[in-house]
Amino acid sequence: MENYPTDFRRVPQSYWMASTPRTEYPALNEDVEADIAVIGGGIAGITSAFLLKKEGYKVVVLEADRILQGTTGHTTAKITSQHSLIYAKLQKKFGEEKARQYAQANEIALQLIAGLIQDNNIDCDFVRQSAYIFTQQDRYIPEIMEEAKIAETFGIKASFLREIPLPLPIKGAVRFDDQAQFHPRKYLLALAKEIPGKGSHIFEQTKAVDIQQGTPCLVLTDNGPRIAASKVIIASHYPFYEAMGLFFTRLYPERSYALGVRIKGDYPGGMYISAEDPTRSLRSQHDKENNLVIVGGEHHKTGQGEDTHNHYLKLRDFARQLFEVEDIPYRWSTQDYTTMDEVPYIGNLTTDTPDVYVATGFGKWGMTTGTAAALIFRDLILNSYSPWMNVYSPSRFTPVASAKNFVQENLNVAKHLISGKLSSVPGIAEIPRGEGKIIEHDGQRAGAYRDQQGVLHIVDTTCTHLGCELQWNSAEASWDCPCHGSRFTYEGEIIDSPAQNKLEHIQE
Image (tube, rainbow, N blue to C red; front, top):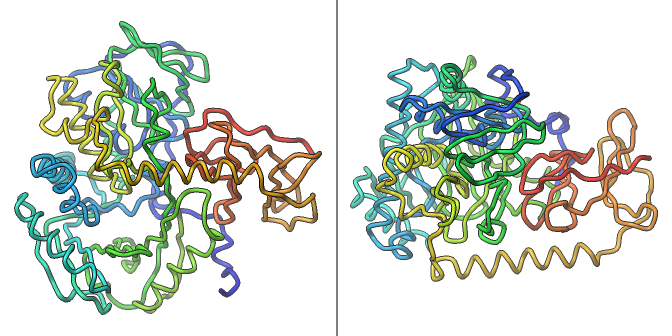
């Protein structure tokens, strides 16, 4: 593959982050009391806090960094109940009733987003679109036809097609009508503004490190101050507090990539995703120049696979097959977790934690799923019941639906845990500026990165979560864990959980 283009050597940035202002909510500097503590400032956390405050609760949102900068700020932002080929699988694995619950939850989440935008007059580029799953392989045709049929029985406007508006030869597709797209940060920043006041707060730059269950529950932070709350919602992407939930054995992390591509000519409309790998996803985005297309895909297990720059290059080449590309001003990647049975965990953390709730494992479909989570939490806190609680329950036991992925993913973890310890590494050598590699330093494995000023940064590359050996991510200049998805900056600071402690920075 050709050398990296100059544009791809710039620091990655998502369009959503580049086109909205930075938030400046204060850090928590004293103990506070609330009815509900929400840990995590993404779509699930912000929507939950917004809805619960509307119900009269005093709510505190706690975010380790800045709100809406994680997965929510690095999404493709499709608001859709079409989550790849999911409904036929759900019906076979869980039965018709639970598959119907899943469909209803996501369709109502879409309606809630549309309603909040209208009621609050939020300018967030909301546009109704059809959503397509297409295939270029004959073997997917039966699955796509079945998906259309089952989705229609659940009340979704679904149909099977032989052609799509994109200039792409296909074998078949399923289309869901009345779906939507938007600018997630514009939408959620507007909701976030309504949370502070009357005893409710948003605190940034404050990391939750533990929960002491009781009456009330106490949320402990790295800054020292505590939050006392009757209920705690964990919406931190990966649960920072597990309480014997063993989520590290029930979730697996994947990274995926996106380009913001400027094209010459018109985009035909619609949101698209391929049924087969490598995944290809497309949607447009209205901005000042009105010709931005978001091209996504190229998922892989975190910390595993080829040079991460190559994923951007493959997406660029795909875009060039469809459009006349004028520029690629934005590129970004994101991380998401998937459960072993492919249905998110939303509800009580465990059967023994009646006052602690969790939302995780969105499987790259966080816009509707995160909103559905907020609706489920509101219903559980108000009424101890949600019409969708059974299909999403974190305590569900699904051995048939989970067995294959459970064995496969945990064997993969074991493989990388062992191989990372046994692999040989070179001694320290000249490392060019802007590059990193695994080296041997003072007789031990270490990670070295030389920044653009020529300073060499060396860290211990043993993940502080469960001891797996980290791998270098060249596209994001980070150290990534191939076992459970923790990520660290080249200086050792935490980017993504489940790790709670930063890497040792070896002075050089």
